[in-house]
Every structure is written in C-alpha cells, then in structure tokens.
Length: 165
Image (cartoon, rainbow, N blue to C red; front, side, top):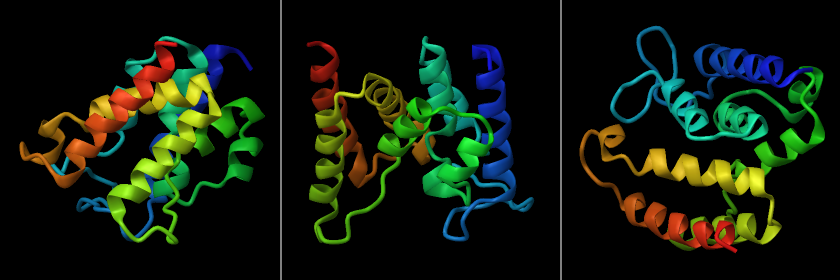
C-alpha cells in the first residue's frame, strides 16, 4: 500500500468509526455522530491532528489515534484493513486505556504519558504531541479551560523533551 493509499484508508476508517460505530458513553449529535465538548463533529479532531504531522506514518496514526479508545474498531480490524504492525503499535501506544489500579485521575494520566515516553516510539510520541496541542485549544472546550488543561501542558512539555534529545 502506498503512503497515499494508507492515509486515505485511515481517513475513511476513522470517519466511519466516529460516525457509525462510536461507543455509547461518547457525546453524539442528532445524527448519532460523535461530537466534541463544543458540539463539533469529532472527525475534525483527528483531521486537525493529522495536519500537524509531516510523516505519512504519523498522519496515518493521527487519523486513527482515537478509534481504539472511542469506537468499536479493534486491532484485528486495523490488520484486516492492511495497516502494518508499526502503525498498529503506534496507535495502541497513543490510545489511553485507563489504569483502574491508579485511583487519582491526574496521576493515572501522568503515568500513561510517562509510559508512552519510555517506549521511545517517535511516531506515537509525535502524534501524541500533535494530539495534545489540538486538545489544548480551549476553543474545543467551549472556551473554558478544564481540569485537564494543566495536564496537557505538563504532558506536552514532558514529551517534547523526548523529541529534543
């Protein structure tokens, strides 16, 4: 699969997943499409994250970065769609699976970010930096910072140190 085909396939899968196969705990609009906190069609988030990435693999992972977390897409489905293990591994690393053994939300999130950095996976780290950059835009949060705003700032600074090495 060419880089262009890989990116197009990721975009198509992402749109289908966030429009037709989102998990019930997510916000949805009258069409059943997943939306963000400001009520904007959620697909604009992965599209924006992908635009911040230069590398085709990073663009692909950026497009898919929330499908395992927010939709019913599985790792096996990613394989069936022809994505290689390097892409799937990076998507899994960016996916935040809550560690329920850590009760404090902030500490749990920081543990997730520390584990991501420790992997040294440049694709996943670069995509997470782009994701955090877009998530830090308070316009996506109805113009109001949330408790996670400071977490995102910390995570951005922490991960950027890995890239600056």
